[in-house]
Amino acid sequence: MNFDLISETLPEWALQEVTLRAAQPSERAAACAALQRAHYLGAPSPCNCDLVQLAVRGEQVLAVVVWTRAARKLAPREAWLGWDPRTRTRRLPLVVQNNRFLVLSVERQTNLASRALGLAVAALPGQWAERTGVTPLLAETFVDPERYAGTCYKAAGWLEAGATAGFGRHGDDYYVAHKHPKRLWLRPLVPDARARLRDPLEPLKGEKSRAFGELPVPAKTAASLATALREVADPRAAAGRQFPLHAMLASAVLAFACGARTVSDVFRFTLELTAAQRRTLGFRCAHHNPQLAPPPGEGCWRKVLAALVPAELTRAIVAWQLAQTTLPPLLAIDGKTLHRGLATLVTLCDAMTGEPLVQVAKCGQGHEKTLAHELVDSLPPGTLDGALVGGDALYGDTALVRQLVQEQGALTLVQLKDNQPTAAVRAEELFAQGAPLFFSTPFELGHGRIDQRHVRTLPVTPEQLGFVHAAQLLEIKRDSTKKSTGVTTTGRRVFILSEALTPADALRAARARWGIENKNHHPRDATWLEDKTRARTGHTAANLALLRGVVLIGWRRRHPKLCAPAFINENNRHLPSAIRELFQPLNSKQ
Image 1 (tube, rainbow, N blue to C red):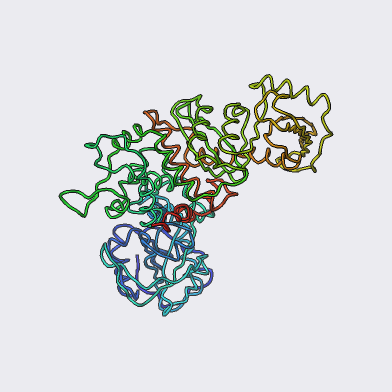
Image 2 (cartoon, helix red, strand yellow):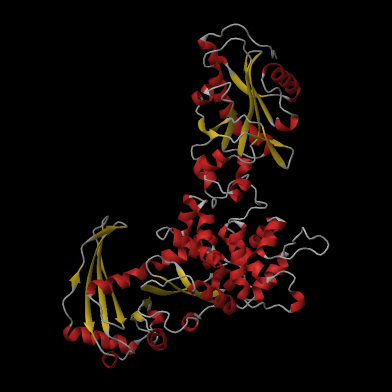
């Protein structure tokens, strides 16, 4: 092959004869020699010459394109992709850099540069995958604005992302200023490259499974989290407390904030932090070297999470949460049973946003009523004064209603079903005797249906209904017509309220808790696969559920209308901000 510069001007039709292929090992030396002669930067070092492409016409080489690994840190690229440090570390192998581009011509050849670049980008994913086993999604390159305008890159479909800071990497550990900022150009190699690289939940082939040394929050924020968790009683004997419990729990919360799903993920997250970050979280320094802070092993994680009593974790989280939160006027008690009854979780949450406010958990299933009582007991008397607390029929328990009304000063709204047979029969009799007319709502469109609700209320006394603190019955009928078939179905629900409300207010309160399944359950199942958990040892499943709830609070506070998966998919950079906002009151007190 001829690597000499051509002097004649190529005819326009000759561009169609230009083809591109990867350089053979025997041709690499000649290609590097041509770069050394004609490129203003010279030839790259062998370690920065992962793939060499040749644009040829017959036996004449017209252009040399060199590709290598992407730059480690680039602020314009990270801003364009929406990367946080952990996502950047994991996804960087999916980005490749155009390290050198040389057209072997003395005269300027019209459209030759953009033609060669277009062929190079089209062949890049396959050739790079053949060489490294990873199919890239994005290409990057730098243009020196003092020499070139980047016209050929723009013509080949590249996007200008901004200017670099003017630093070059020197060795493996540090950067030096060269005072010549470059313009960064990016080229997606697939149509949805930007969305796929940004989404931290979508596993991508070729990404790193580990992201060493990256916290999702600043070190001071992480330290405040560890301080808040110091109140949790350690179940281990004094001789077995090499790794402080508060540091381990803080690491677990941060790991879940970064998408960890299992105990093994939490172990890997802590292992990948730097010694300085682990010291900040509260891990002790090694005796033989104060600069080291060894992390717990996976076996230690499993033993601690299995032995930790969920009630102790609940007590610390509840005390901390109530100290910084004003409870909203509409609340809902919601229960959830984890995969195959491994644990039961009961949450007092904001009925409008789904934000968990107080959580209690216990291993095994069938504990929802017991946990509901424990949840109310964990609150100081009068905490729920004036708030309306709703729940489904399972929580239509007279003892629980009495506890909420008499000890906490709350108003209650519970659904009435056959689990309260006496009250159900008497409610039907009272409605039949002289209930008022229905109040009808406007038609509502959505989910392929046309819905209209009819509401009526009836004042009652506890003696009439046979239910403690009963003050009003609420009946809601829904006529739902499916648009595709025109078939209309009717549903009916009855509720008991401890204080009389207007029909419109009663309907609003009842409907607020209907979306809890999507606002509370779905984020847990979609983000952390909580419904598929395999943590069967001791209290592990219950403790993991409580720690995930701490992260969910941060999501809800920042974007109350987004479920957790949509929140992360929108932009992973929100995660650190959400957790930072969650623990900000603690920072201000220190």
